[in-house]
Image (tube, rainbow, N blue to C red):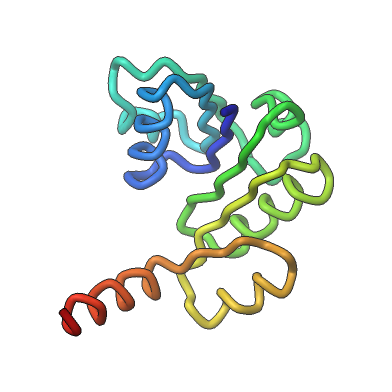
Length: 132
């Protein structure tokens, strides 16, 4: 798989590391080069400094040939915008975006985005554990 990840925080860096270790081609985009410090020294993927809502930056990151795009920044609007660009302009097959505000999760799904709210995921996980 060829995956492009927007953001290089803890979740994004962990995902990039897992995908890289499995032999996938991984590119991580972030506005701040210092954020790449969260990636392990052995990371074999590519890093790109830039705004992942910019089509030129996405081209530089190899999005036209990507199988997946995952937007994992802390900014819901930027995640949704980049996800829409990946899906509708570049035609990426699998696009996932993190949405922190659970009220927006359903709205973004109406836009055709696969949106995941960590708050809702964790709440459902805890609820499931309570029912065990």
